[in-house]
Length: 264
Length: 318
Ligand SMILES: Nc1ncnc2c1ncn2[C@@H]1O[C@H](COP(=O)(O)OP(=O)(O)OP(=O)(O)O)[C@@H](O)[C@H]1O
Ligand SMILES: [Mg+2]
Image 1 (tube, rainbow over the protein chains, first blue to last red):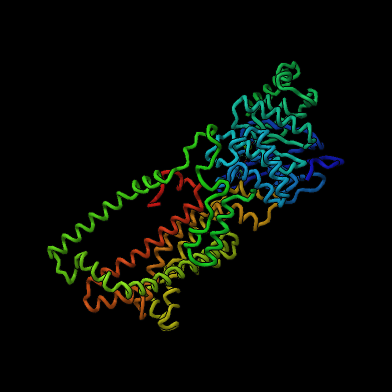
Image 2: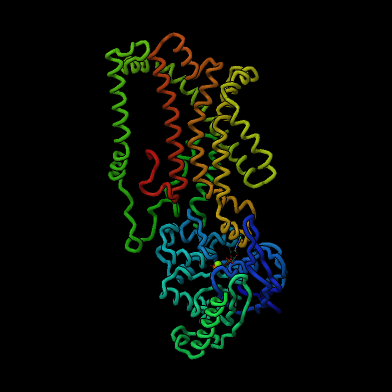
C-alpha cells in the first residue's frame, strides 16, 4: 500500500451533515448543516470549542458514525460503513493494554494482513522517528500519556494511508515535544502528499500545520469560517512563529473563537 | 517477531480449553516472547525498571507470601489437635490429626484411586463447562437473538437445585461417569458464561471502531481484541467454576457410585469411621485447592499485563 494514488476531484466531500444524538434523557444536536470539500493533498485543521462536534465530524468521515442527514464521500466513493483507506488517531490513545508499544503499532499490519517483514521495518522507522526507541516492549501502562499518543500516531501511519484523520493527536504532549511532532508531521505530509484532517485546540498548531483552518461554532457545531493559510508549503517552526502572517491569522482565530464562545 | 505474545498465549488458552487439561495451559506457554513479562521493558537506564528477579529473590517472595497462610493453618491444626486429644468431643466424632494421618497412610492406595476418579470427573466437567460456557458467552455477546433465546435457559440451568436432579441423572445415565460429569458441568457452567459475557461486552467501543477502520473482519477482531480483553473477567469466572466443579462431581457420587471420594464419604459415614471421613474431606479440599492454583497460574501467565496481576496485588498465593 503506497501513499495517495493520483486522484481527480475531492478527497473528502461533506454536504449538509447534521447529526443528532438522542437518548432517553435528552437530545443533542452535535452538528448542524456542515458542508466542506477537501482536495487531495490538503492539510485541513479544525478548531472549535469543546463539545462542538469535531470528533463526531471525523468519525462520520471514517464511516463510524452515521449522520442523521447529509452526504459524505471519501476518495470519490460515498461513505456507507467503516472506511479502511484511512489512518485514524483517536482522541484517547486507544491502545491494547496487553501489547507492548511495537506490538500495538503492528496491530495495524496484523489486522490488514500486510506483509510482515515490510511492516516490521516500517514500524522500526516510525518508532525511531517519534523517539520511542528503547520503549518497544513497554506496555501502555508503563508509558507516559504523550508516549501513548505517539504510539497511536505510529499505528495510524504504519500502512501509509492516503487519508489521515487525527483527533487532537498531540493533546497530551509537552510543548517542546509537541513542536517536534508538529515539525515531523509537517515533513511527513510534505513528503507523502497525504490528505490530512486534524482537530486541535491549539491555534499555533492549527496555523503551522494547516493549508486551511476551519473554525467551528459552539454546539450545535457549524462551520463559521474557513481561513486559507498564506504561508509557504515548506515551513520551518521557528520561522513561522515569527512570521507576521502567522501572527495576524492567529489573532483573527483567537478573536473569532473568543467571540463565538462569548455569544453562546 | 511480529506476533504478539498474548495472542499466542490466548490461542494456547483456547487450545487448552478445547483439548483438555487446564494444566496444559499452565504449562505450555514458553517463557520468552515480547511483552510477556511485566518486567520486560526498555533497556537499563531508559525506563527505570526493576531488574529481573533472581532465584533467591523469588524464593524469598514465595516465603513472604506463604508464611501467613501457613501460620493460620498451623494454628487451626493445633486447635483441632487440642480439642481431639483432650477428648472435649468424643473421638468417634472428631478424631485426632494423628488418627487421620494413620488412616491416610494405611489406606493410601485405595484413597489415591478414589481421588483420581473424583479428580478425573472434576477436570473433565470443568473443561467441558469452560468450553461450553465460553461458546455460549460468545453467542450471547455477539447476537441479540441468541442473547434473548439463551439467557433464560442458562439461568434455568443455574437455578434448578442440582442435588434434586442428581437422582434423575442416575436413572437416565446409570452409575457410570456420565451423571457426575453432567452435574459438574451444570454447576460450573454458569460463572463461565456470566464472566465471559461481561468480559466480551466490556470492550472499549473505541477499540472496535479502530478495528473497523483497519478493515478487520469479526474473527480477527475477536482474536486480537475482544478475546484478550475478556480474559481478566473470564479467568475470574474460571476460578469460581473450577471449585464448583468439585462440588458437582462429589454430589454426583453421593447419589449413586461405586468409586470416588463422595462414595467413600458415604461409606465412612455409614461405618462411623471418623478418621476415614476426615481424610476423605481433606483430599476433596486438596483437589479444589490444587485445581484453583493451577487456574491462578494460568491466569498469571495469560494476563500479566492486567492491573489485578501487577506487582504485589495478587489475590492469593502465586
Ligand atoms: N455517542 C454519543 N451519544 C450521545 N451524544 C454524543 C455521542 N458522541 C458525542 N455526543 C455529543 O455530541 C457533542 C459533540 O461531541 P464531540 O465528541 O464530537 O465533541 P468535540 O468537539 O470533539 O469536543 P472535544 O473538543 O471536547 O473533544 C457533545 O455534546 C457530546 O455530548
Ligand atoms: Mg473530541
